[in-house]
Image (cartoon, rainbow, N blue to C red):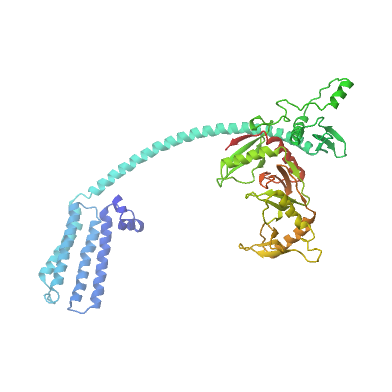
Length: 548
Protein backbone atom coordinates (compact mmCIF):
# COMPACT_ATOMS: atom_id res chain seq x y z
CA UNK A 1 0.00 0.00 0.00
CA UNK A 2 2.93 2.33 0.64
CA UNK A 3 4.04 1.79 -2.94
CA UNK A 4 0.56 2.59 -4.24
CA UNK A 5 0.64 5.94 -2.46
CA UNK A 6 3.53 6.99 -4.68
CA UNK A 7 1.49 6.40 -7.83
CA UNK A 8 -0.88 8.97 -9.26
CA UNK A 9 -3.75 6.45 -9.56
CA UNK A 10 -3.48 5.36 -5.92
CA UNK A 11 -3.24 8.94 -4.75
CA UNK A 12 -6.35 9.96 -6.69
CA UNK A 13 -8.23 6.89 -5.38
CA UNK A 14 -7.29 7.78 -1.81
CA UNK A 15 -8.36 11.43 -2.22
CA UNK A 16 -11.65 10.74 -4.05
CA UNK A 17 -12.88 7.29 -2.88
CA UNK A 18 -11.07 6.11 0.24
CA UNK A 19 -8.05 4.31 1.60
CA UNK A 20 -7.48 1.04 -0.35
CA UNK A 21 -6.68 -2.17 1.52
CA UNK A 22 -4.92 -3.88 -1.42
CA UNK A 23 -3.26 -2.98 -4.69
CA UNK A 24 -5.85 -5.00 -6.66
CA UNK A 25 -8.63 -2.85 -5.19
CA UNK A 26 -7.23 0.22 -6.95
CA UNK A 27 -6.45 -1.67 -10.18
CA UNK A 28 -9.95 -3.17 -10.24
CA UNK A 29 -11.53 0.24 -9.97
CA UNK A 30 -9.58 1.60 -12.93
CA UNK A 31 -10.24 -1.57 -15.04
CA UNK A 32 -13.96 -1.25 -14.31
CA UNK A 33 -13.92 2.39 -15.41
CA UNK A 34 -11.89 1.49 -18.51
CA UNK A 35 -14.49 -1.12 -19.49
CA UNK A 36 -17.29 1.42 -19.14
CA UNK A 37 -15.42 3.87 -21.39
CA UNK A 38 -14.87 1.11 -24.02
CA UNK A 39 -18.58 0.37 -24.06
CA UNK A 40 -19.49 4.03 -24.51
CA UNK A 41 -16.89 4.40 -27.24
CA UNK A 42 -18.30 1.33 -29.06
CA UNK A 43 -21.82 2.76 -28.96
CA UNK A 44 -20.59 6.10 -30.29
CA UNK A 45 -18.69 4.45 -33.19
CA UNK A 46 -21.74 2.26 -34.01
CA UNK A 47 -23.96 5.31 -34.31
CA UNK A 48 -21.50 7.17 -36.50
CA UNK A 49 -20.69 4.39 -39.02
CA UNK A 50 -22.52 2.50 -41.74
CA UNK A 51 -23.40 -1.17 -41.55
CA UNK A 52 -21.14 -3.89 -42.95
CA UNK A 53 -18.04 -1.69 -42.87
CA UNK A 54 -14.70 -2.06 -41.12
CA UNK A 55 -15.46 1.03 -39.01
CA UNK A 56 -18.75 -0.58 -37.91
CA UNK A 57 -16.71 -3.67 -36.95
CA UNK A 58 -14.45 -1.51 -34.75
CA UNK A 59 -17.56 -0.23 -32.99
CA UNK A 60 -18.69 -3.84 -32.40
CA UNK A 61 -15.21 -4.69 -31.09
CA UNK A 62 -15.10 -1.80 -28.61
CA UNK A 63 -18.57 -2.70 -27.35
CA UNK A 64 -17.51 -6.38 -27.04
CA UNK A 65 -14.42 -5.46 -24.99
CA UNK A 66 -16.51 -3.61 -22.42
CA UNK A 67 -17.98 -6.72 -20.62
CA UNK A 68 -14.63 -8.51 -20.01
CA UNK A 69 -12.98 -5.42 -18.51
CA UNK A 70 -16.02 -4.48 -16.43
CA UNK A 71 -16.24 -8.05 -15.07
CA UNK A 72 -12.47 -8.22 -14.45
CA UNK A 73 -12.52 -4.91 -12.58
CA UNK A 74 -15.27 -6.19 -10.30
CA UNK A 75 -13.63 -9.59 -9.78
CA UNK A 76 -10.09 -8.53 -8.81
CA UNK A 77 -11.44 -6.12 -6.18
CA UNK A 78 -12.53 -9.27 -4.24
CA UNK A 79 -10.10 -10.68 -1.60
CA UNK A 80 -9.34 -13.82 -3.67
CA UNK A 81 -6.53 -16.26 -3.77
CA UNK A 82 -3.96 -15.48 -6.42
CA UNK A 83 -5.31 -18.36 -8.55
CA UNK A 84 -8.71 -16.65 -8.78
CA UNK A 85 -7.11 -13.34 -9.80
CA UNK A 86 -4.93 -15.01 -12.41
CA UNK A 87 -8.00 -16.91 -13.75
CA UNK A 88 -9.80 -13.56 -14.19
CA UNK A 89 -6.86 -12.10 -16.15
CA UNK A 90 -6.77 -15.29 -18.29
CA UNK A 91 -10.47 -15.05 -19.11
CA UNK A 92 -10.05 -11.40 -20.12
CA UNK A 93 -7.16 -12.32 -22.40
CA UNK A 94 -9.26 -15.05 -24.08
CA UNK A 95 -12.16 -12.65 -24.63
CA UNK A 96 -9.79 -10.03 -26.10
CA UNK A 97 -8.47 -12.77 -28.45
CA UNK A 98 -12.02 -13.50 -29.59
CA UNK A 99 -12.61 -9.78 -30.27
CA UNK A 100 -9.38 -9.53 -32.29
CA UNK A 101 -10.45 -12.59 -34.30
CA UNK A 102 -13.82 -10.94 -34.95
CA UNK A 103 -12.17 -7.76 -36.28
CA UNK A 104 -10.09 -9.87 -38.71
CA UNK A 105 -13.10 -11.67 -40.23
CA UNK A 106 -15.60 -8.84 -40.22
CA UNK A 107 -17.40 -8.02 -42.45
CA UNK A 108 -16.62 -10.43 -45.28
CA UNK A 109 -16.10 -13.55 -43.15
CA UNK A 110 -18.87 -12.82 -40.73
CA UNK A 111 -22.30 -14.32 -41.30
CA UNK A 112 -24.97 -11.76 -40.75
CA UNK A 113 -27.57 -14.27 -39.56
CA UNK A 114 -25.57 -16.62 -37.28
CA UNK A 115 -22.08 -15.09 -37.07
CA UNK A 116 -18.90 -17.18 -36.77
CA UNK A 117 -19.36 -19.98 -34.16
CA UNK A 118 -15.61 -20.26 -33.49
CA UNK A 119 -15.20 -16.56 -32.70
CA UNK A 120 -18.30 -16.58 -30.53
CA UNK A 121 -17.05 -19.68 -28.69
CA UNK A 122 -13.64 -18.13 -27.88
CA UNK A 123 -15.25 -14.91 -26.69
CA UNK A 124 -17.79 -16.82 -24.56
CA UNK A 125 -15.09 -19.03 -22.96
CA UNK A 126 -13.24 -15.88 -21.86
CA UNK A 127 -16.36 -14.48 -20.23
CA UNK A 128 -17.00 -17.85 -18.58
CA UNK A 129 -13.51 -17.94 -17.07
CA UNK A 130 -13.98 -14.45 -15.64
CA UNK A 131 -17.35 -15.44 -14.19
CA UNK A 132 -15.90 -18.61 -12.60
CA UNK A 133 -13.07 -16.56 -11.09
CA UNK A 134 -15.58 -14.18 -9.53
CA UNK A 135 -18.22 -16.69 -8.36
CA UNK A 136 -16.91 -20.22 -7.97
CA UNK A 137 -13.35 -19.57 -6.76
CA UNK A 138 -14.43 -17.48 -3.72
CA UNK A 139 -16.70 -20.38 -2.62
CA UNK A 140 -13.96 -22.99 -2.92
CA UNK A 141 -10.99 -21.07 -1.39
CA UNK A 142 -9.97 -19.31 1.82
CA UNK A 143 -10.65 -15.59 1.36
CA UNK A 144 -7.58 -14.65 3.48
CA UNK A 145 -4.40 -14.36 1.38
CA UNK A 146 -1.10 -12.52 1.32
CA UNK A 147 -2.50 -8.95 1.46
CA UNK A 148 -4.43 -9.75 4.60
CA UNK A 149 -1.37 -11.31 6.18
CA UNK A 150 0.46 -8.09 5.41
CA UNK A 151 -2.41 -6.15 6.99
CA UNK A 152 -2.07 -8.26 10.15
CA UNK A 153 1.65 -7.41 10.24
CA UNK A 154 0.82 -3.73 9.88
CA UNK A 155 -1.74 -3.97 12.69
CA UNK A 156 0.88 -5.63 14.93
CA UNK A 157 3.34 -2.84 14.10
CA UNK A 158 0.67 -0.23 14.88
CA UNK A 159 0.04 -1.89 18.23
CA UNK A 160 3.77 -1.77 19.03
CA UNK A 161 3.87 1.89 18.05
CA UNK A 162 0.90 2.60 20.32
CA UNK A 163 2.69 0.91 23.21
CA UNK A 164 5.80 3.03 22.58
CA UNK A 165 3.60 6.13 22.45
CA UNK A 166 2.09 5.12 25.79
CA UNK A 167 5.56 4.81 27.32
CA UNK A 168 6.50 8.25 25.92
CA UNK A 169 3.25 9.66 27.31
CA UNK A 170 4.09 8.28 30.74
CA UNK A 171 7.55 9.85 30.53
CA UNK A 172 6.02 13.15 29.45
CA UNK A 173 3.66 13.06 32.40
CA UNK A 174 6.64 12.57 34.69
CA UNK A 175 8.43 15.53 33.11
CA UNK A 176 5.24 17.57 33.45
CA UNK A 177 5.08 16.79 37.15
CA UNK A 178 8.73 17.85 37.55
CA UNK A 179 8.04 21.04 35.62
CA UNK A 180 5.06 21.82 37.85
CA UNK A 181 7.26 21.47 40.94
CA UNK A 182 9.85 23.77 39.35
CA UNK A 183 7.07 26.22 38.50
CA UNK A 184 5.94 26.21 42.12
CA UNK A 185 9.51 26.95 43.23
CA UNK A 186 9.70 29.76 40.64
CA UNK A 187 6.49 31.22 42.02
CA UNK A 188 8.00 31.28 45.49
CA UNK A 189 11.12 33.00 44.10
CA UNK A 190 8.87 35.48 42.31
CA UNK A 191 7.11 36.31 45.57
CA UNK A 192 10.48 36.98 47.21
CA UNK A 193 11.55 39.08 44.21
CA UNK A 194 8.36 41.13 44.42
CA UNK A 195 9.08 41.82 48.07
CA UNK A 196 12.61 42.93 47.17
CA UNK A 197 11.22 45.04 44.35
CA UNK A 198 8.82 46.78 46.72
CA UNK A 199 11.71 47.60 49.03
CA UNK A 200 13.71 48.90 46.04
CA UNK A 201 10.77 51.06 45.00
CA UNK A 202 10.74 52.63 48.45
CA UNK A 203 14.46 53.37 48.12
CA UNK A 204 13.93 54.83 44.62
CA UNK A 205 11.13 57.02 45.95
CA UNK A 206 13.43 58.34 48.65
CA UNK A 207 16.19 58.94 46.09
CA UNK A 208 13.76 60.76 43.80
CA UNK A 209 12.80 63.00 46.69
CA UNK A 210 16.48 63.83 47.22
CA UNK A 211 16.97 64.50 43.50
CA UNK A 212 13.87 66.70 43.44
CA UNK A 213 15.24 68.71 46.31
CA UNK A 214 18.51 69.12 44.44
CA UNK A 215 16.74 70.25 41.27
CA UNK A 216 14.79 72.82 43.25
CA UNK A 217 18.02 74.47 44.28
CA UNK A 218 17.95 78.25 44.15
CA UNK A 219 21.70 78.52 43.44
CA UNK A 220 24.05 77.74 40.58
CA UNK A 221 27.77 77.15 40.16
CA UNK A 222 29.90 79.68 38.27
CA UNK A 223 33.37 79.19 36.77
CA UNK A 224 35.60 82.30 36.60
CA UNK A 225 39.20 83.45 36.61
CA UNK A 226 40.53 85.28 39.62
CA UNK A 227 42.86 88.28 39.61
CA UNK A 228 45.89 86.01 39.23
CA UNK A 229 44.41 84.36 36.15
CA UNK A 230 43.66 81.02 37.89
CA UNK A 231 40.30 79.31 37.30
CA UNK A 232 38.01 79.06 40.35
CA UNK A 233 34.40 78.12 41.08
CA UNK A 234 31.77 79.64 43.33
CA UNK A 235 28.18 78.82 44.31
CA UNK A 236 25.92 81.86 43.91
CA UNK A 237 22.33 82.17 45.12
CA UNK A 238 19.79 83.62 42.70
CA UNK A 239 19.61 86.70 44.88
CA UNK A 240 23.28 87.34 44.03
CA UNK A 241 24.86 86.22 47.31
CA UNK A 242 27.91 83.91 47.07
CA UNK A 243 27.24 80.81 49.17
CA UNK A 244 30.60 79.08 48.71
CA UNK A 245 33.83 79.43 46.71
CA UNK A 246 36.66 77.13 45.68
CA UNK A 247 39.02 78.66 48.24
CA UNK A 248 41.97 78.05 45.89
CA UNK A 249 42.95 78.51 42.28
CA UNK A 250 43.40 75.67 39.76
CA UNK A 251 45.98 75.32 37.05
CA UNK A 252 43.32 74.74 34.37
CA UNK A 253 39.62 75.23 33.79
CA UNK A 254 39.14 71.46 33.53
CA UNK A 255 40.53 70.90 37.03
CA UNK A 256 38.31 73.64 38.40
CA UNK A 257 35.31 71.85 36.87
CA UNK A 258 36.46 68.56 38.41
CA UNK A 259 36.68 70.22 41.82
CA UNK A 260 33.18 71.62 41.30
CA UNK A 261 31.82 68.17 40.45
CA UNK A 262 33.53 66.70 43.51
CA UNK A 263 31.72 69.23 45.72
CA UNK A 264 28.38 68.41 44.07
CA UNK A 265 28.88 64.67 44.68
CA UNK A 266 30.14 64.86 48.25
CA UNK A 267 28.39 67.88 49.80
CA UNK A 268 25.04 66.14 50.20
CA UNK A 269 25.08 64.09 53.38
CA UNK A 270 28.51 65.30 54.54
CA UNK A 271 28.93 65.49 58.30
CA UNK A 272 29.90 68.53 60.34
CA UNK A 273 33.37 68.66 61.87
CA UNK A 274 34.07 71.60 64.19
CA UNK A 275 37.73 72.69 64.22
CA UNK A 276 38.99 75.21 66.72
CA UNK A 277 41.62 77.29 64.86
CA UNK A 278 43.30 80.45 66.10
CA UNK A 279 42.21 83.55 64.23
CA UNK A 280 45.74 84.38 63.06
CA UNK A 281 46.32 80.88 61.65
CA UNK A 282 42.99 80.91 59.85
CA UNK A 283 43.80 84.24 58.23
CA UNK A 284 47.19 82.97 57.10
CA UNK A 285 45.59 79.90 55.53
CA UNK A 286 43.00 82.04 53.79
CA UNK A 287 45.69 84.22 52.19
CA UNK A 288 47.68 81.25 50.88
CA UNK A 289 46.33 79.41 47.84
CA UNK A 290 48.59 76.47 48.64
CA UNK A 291 49.34 73.54 46.39
CA UNK A 292 46.62 71.75 44.47
CA UNK A 293 45.17 68.57 46.04
CA UNK A 294 47.18 65.43 45.46
CA UNK A 295 45.00 62.85 47.20
CA UNK A 296 44.59 59.80 44.96
CA UNK A 297 40.86 59.81 45.62
CA UNK A 298 40.44 63.50 44.81
CA UNK A 299 39.02 64.03 41.29
CA UNK A 300 41.15 67.19 40.99
CA UNK A 301 44.27 65.09 40.41
CA UNK A 302 45.52 65.07 36.78
CA UNK A 303 44.24 62.08 34.79
CA UNK A 304 47.03 60.37 32.82
CA UNK A 305 44.82 57.68 31.30
CA UNK A 306 41.56 55.81 31.57
CA UNK A 307 42.62 53.38 34.30
CA UNK A 308 43.82 56.15 36.62
CA UNK A 309 40.86 58.52 36.13
CA UNK A 310 38.58 59.92 38.81
CA UNK A 311 35.97 57.76 40.43
CA UNK A 312 33.04 57.38 38.05
CA UNK A 313 29.46 56.25 38.50
CA UNK A 314 29.15 55.24 34.84
CA UNK A 315 30.63 52.83 32.29
CA UNK A 316 31.27 53.13 28.57
CA UNK A 317 29.69 50.29 26.57
CA UNK A 318 31.22 49.47 23.19
CA UNK A 319 28.83 47.49 20.96
CA UNK A 320 27.84 46.68 17.36
CA UNK A 321 24.36 47.84 16.33
CA UNK A 322 21.85 46.14 14.01
CA UNK A 323 23.63 47.61 10.95
CA UNK A 324 26.98 46.06 12.07
CA UNK A 325 28.35 49.51 12.88
CA UNK A 326 30.27 50.08 16.10
CA UNK A 327 28.94 52.58 18.64
CA UNK A 328 29.54 53.51 22.26
CA UNK A 329 27.26 54.78 25.01
CA UNK A 330 27.83 56.02 28.57
CA UNK A 331 25.55 54.17 30.96
CA UNK A 332 25.14 55.28 34.59
CA UNK A 333 25.24 52.67 37.36
CA UNK A 334 21.49 53.19 37.79
CA UNK A 335 20.97 51.89 34.22
CA UNK A 336 20.25 55.24 32.59
CA UNK A 337 22.06 56.01 29.33
CA UNK A 338 23.77 59.37 29.91
CA UNK A 339 25.09 59.83 26.37
CA UNK A 340 25.98 57.97 23.17
CA UNK A 341 28.22 58.27 20.14
CA UNK A 342 25.53 59.79 17.94
CA UNK A 343 26.82 57.91 14.88
CA UNK A 344 28.13 54.50 13.87
CA UNK A 345 31.72 53.61 12.96
CA UNK A 346 32.94 51.12 10.36
CA UNK A 347 35.24 49.26 12.78
CA UNK A 348 35.77 48.74 16.48
CA UNK A 349 39.11 50.56 16.34
CA UNK A 350 37.44 53.68 14.86
CA UNK A 351 34.86 53.65 17.66
CA UNK A 352 37.65 53.31 20.25
CA UNK A 353 39.52 56.26 18.73
CA UNK A 354 36.34 58.36 18.86
CA UNK A 355 35.85 57.33 22.48
CA UNK A 356 39.45 58.33 23.24
CA UNK A 357 38.82 61.78 21.72
CA UNK A 358 35.73 62.11 23.87
CA UNK A 359 37.76 61.36 27.02
CA UNK A 360 40.38 63.90 25.98
CA UNK A 361 37.93 66.77 25.44
CA UNK A 362 34.87 66.20 27.62
CA UNK A 363 36.27 67.47 30.94
CA UNK A 364 37.56 70.80 29.56
CA UNK A 365 34.73 71.36 27.08
CA UNK A 366 32.87 74.63 27.54
CA UNK A 367 29.28 75.51 26.69
CA UNK A 368 28.60 77.22 23.36
CA UNK A 369 26.00 79.95 23.71
CA UNK A 370 23.83 80.14 20.59
CA UNK A 371 21.18 82.83 20.91
CA UNK A 372 19.41 82.67 18.56
CA UNK A 373 22.03 81.70 15.93
CA UNK A 374 25.82 81.61 15.59
CA UNK A 375 28.54 80.81 13.06
CA UNK A 376 30.69 77.67 13.48
CA UNK A 377 34.06 77.23 11.80
CA UNK A 378 35.14 73.59 11.40
CA UNK A 379 37.53 71.37 9.48
CA UNK A 380 35.86 68.92 7.07
CA UNK A 381 36.93 65.42 5.99
CA UNK A 382 39.05 66.90 3.18
CA UNK A 383 41.06 68.94 5.74
CA UNK A 384 39.50 72.16 4.46
CA UNK A 385 37.95 74.76 6.75
CA UNK A 386 34.28 75.68 6.38
CA UNK A 387 31.70 77.73 8.22
CA UNK A 388 28.02 77.18 8.88
CA UNK A 389 25.24 79.20 10.46
CA UNK A 390 23.58 77.16 13.24
CA UNK A 391 20.27 77.96 14.95
CA UNK A 392 19.83 77.27 18.67
CA UNK A 393 17.42 74.42 17.77
CA UNK A 394 20.36 72.60 16.14
CA UNK A 395 19.35 73.18 12.51
CA UNK A 396 21.99 74.32 10.02
CA UNK A 397 20.60 77.46 8.34
CA UNK A 398 23.48 77.93 5.85
CA UNK A 399 27.02 76.78 5.14
CA UNK A 400 29.99 78.15 3.25
CA UNK A 401 29.47 76.16 0.06
CA UNK A 402 33.24 75.83 -0.35
CA UNK A 403 36.33 74.94 1.64
CA UNK A 404 39.10 77.30 2.76
CA UNK A 405 42.80 76.63 3.12
CA UNK A 406 42.95 77.95 6.72
CA UNK A 407 40.68 78.74 9.64
CA UNK A 408 41.38 82.48 9.32
CA UNK A 409 40.25 82.51 5.68
CA UNK A 410 37.08 80.66 6.64
CA UNK A 411 36.42 83.27 9.30
CA UNK A 412 36.96 86.01 6.70
CA UNK A 413 34.47 84.22 4.43
CA UNK A 414 31.76 84.07 7.07
CA UNK A 415 32.06 87.82 7.60
CA UNK A 416 30.87 88.49 4.02
CA UNK A 417 27.15 87.79 4.60
CA UNK A 418 27.20 90.45 7.32
CA UNK A 419 28.45 93.37 5.20
CA UNK A 420 26.44 95.79 3.10
CA UNK A 421 27.24 94.11 -0.20
CA UNK A 422 25.76 90.75 0.84
CA UNK A 423 22.61 92.48 1.98
CA UNK A 424 22.28 94.44 -1.27
CA UNK A 425 23.31 97.80 0.18
CA UNK A 426 26.55 98.49 -1.71
CA UNK A 427 27.68 102.11 -2.05
CA UNK A 428 26.75 102.23 -5.71
CA UNK A 429 23.27 100.91 -4.95
CA UNK A 430 23.90 97.55 -6.60
CA UNK A 431 24.54 94.23 -4.87
CA UNK A 432 27.66 92.23 -5.64
CA UNK A 433 25.93 88.97 -4.70
CA UNK A 434 22.61 87.36 -5.58
CA UNK A 435 20.48 84.67 -3.92
CA UNK A 436 19.50 81.90 -6.38
CA UNK A 437 16.80 79.29 -5.75
CA UNK A 438 17.09 76.15 -7.89
CA UNK A 439 15.91 72.53 -8.08
CA UNK A 440 18.62 69.87 -7.72
CA UNK A 441 18.81 66.46 -9.41
CA UNK A 442 16.91 64.84 -6.56
CA UNK A 443 13.89 67.09 -7.11
CA UNK A 444 14.53 69.19 -3.98
CA UNK A 445 14.79 72.96 -3.85
CA UNK A 446 17.98 74.67 -2.64
CA UNK A 447 19.42 78.18 -2.54
CA UNK A 448 22.90 79.62 -2.98
CA UNK A 449 24.46 83.07 -2.64
CA UNK A 450 26.55 83.74 -5.76
CA UNK A 451 29.05 86.62 -6.09
CA UNK A 452 29.20 88.58 -9.33
CA UNK A 453 32.57 86.94 -10.01
CA UNK A 454 30.85 83.52 -10.05
CA UNK A 455 32.05 82.28 -6.65
CA UNK A 456 29.48 80.61 -4.43
CA UNK A 457 29.63 82.45 -1.11
CA UNK A 458 27.08 80.30 0.72
CA UNK A 459 24.44 77.64 0.09
CA UNK A 460 21.53 76.06 1.89
CA UNK A 461 23.39 72.91 2.94
CA UNK A 462 20.15 70.90 2.60
CA UNK A 463 17.21 70.41 0.24
CA UNK A 464 13.64 71.65 0.70
CA UNK A 465 10.36 70.12 -0.44
CA UNK A 466 9.19 73.26 -2.29
CA UNK A 467 10.47 76.52 -3.71
CA UNK A 468 8.57 78.49 -1.07
CA UNK A 469 10.37 76.59 1.70
CA UNK A 470 13.74 77.45 0.14
CA UNK A 471 12.69 81.11 -0.11
CA UNK A 472 11.66 81.09 3.56
CA UNK A 473 15.11 79.71 4.41
CA UNK A 474 16.72 82.63 2.56
CA UNK A 475 14.66 85.02 4.66
CA UNK A 476 15.84 83.29 7.84
CA UNK A 477 19.44 83.75 6.73
CA UNK A 478 18.83 87.45 6.26
CA UNK A 479 17.21 87.57 9.70
CA UNK A 480 19.90 85.73 11.70
CA UNK A 481 23.17 86.28 9.84
CA UNK A 482 23.73 90.01 10.61
CA UNK A 483 23.58 89.51 14.40
CA UNK A 484 25.15 86.03 14.61
CA UNK A 485 28.52 85.84 16.34
CA UNK A 486 31.34 83.39 15.64
CA UNK A 487 31.65 80.64 18.23
CA UNK A 488 35.10 80.34 19.76
CA UNK A 489 35.80 76.87 21.13
CA UNK A 490 38.90 75.10 22.35
CA UNK A 491 39.37 71.46 21.39
CA UNK A 492 35.65 70.76 21.72
CA UNK A 493 32.51 72.32 23.19
CA UNK A 494 29.02 71.32 24.28
CA UNK A 495 26.08 72.59 22.25
CA UNK A 496 22.69 72.69 23.95
CA UNK A 497 19.81 73.06 21.51
CA UNK A 498 16.07 72.52 21.12
CA UNK A 499 15.03 69.82 18.62
CA UNK A 500 11.97 69.58 16.36
CA UNK A 501 9.96 67.91 19.15
CA UNK A 502 10.55 70.93 21.47
CA UNK A 503 12.89 68.85 23.65
CA UNK A 504 16.31 70.02 24.77
CA UNK A 505 19.39 68.02 23.77
CA UNK A 506 23.17 68.33 23.97
CA UNK A 507 26.04 67.25 21.75
CA UNK A 508 29.80 67.47 22.14
CA UNK A 509 31.25 68.92 18.93
CA UNK A 510 34.96 68.92 18.08
CA UNK A 511 36.42 72.11 16.66
CA UNK A 512 36.69 70.33 13.30
CA UNK A 513 32.89 70.11 13.24
CA UNK A 514 32.55 66.40 14.08
CA UNK A 515 30.07 65.38 16.76
CA UNK A 516 31.94 63.31 19.37
CA UNK A 517 28.83 62.39 21.40
CA UNK A 518 25.22 63.40 21.90
CA UNK A 519 22.56 63.06 24.57
CA UNK A 520 20.69 60.19 22.93
CA UNK A 521 17.43 61.52 24.39
CA UNK A 522 15.53 64.77 24.84
CA UNK A 523 14.98 66.72 28.07
CA UNK A 524 12.00 68.77 29.18
CA UNK A 525 14.04 71.91 29.87
CA UNK A 526 17.40 73.51 29.09
CA UNK A 527 18.42 73.18 32.75
CA UNK A 528 17.85 69.42 32.63
CA UNK A 529 20.08 69.20 29.56
CA UNK A 530 22.75 71.24 31.35
CA UNK A 531 22.57 68.87 34.32
CA UNK A 532 22.98 65.94 31.94
CA UNK A 533 26.12 67.57 30.52
CA UNK A 534 27.42 68.01 34.05
CA UNK A 535 26.92 64.29 34.67
CA UNK A 536 28.81 63.40 31.49
CA UNK A 537 31.68 65.72 32.36
CA UNK A 538 31.88 64.14 35.82
CA UNK A 539 31.70 60.48 34.81
CA UNK A 540 33.10 60.16 31.28
CA UNK A 541 36.85 60.75 32.00
CA UNK A 542 37.16 57.91 34.51
CA UNK A 543 34.51 55.53 33.14
CA UNK A 544 35.65 52.03 32.25
CA UNK A 545 35.01 50.56 28.80
CA UNK A 546 33.31 47.21 28.33
CA UNK A 547 32.56 45.46 25.04
CA UNK A 548 29.18 43.87 24.39
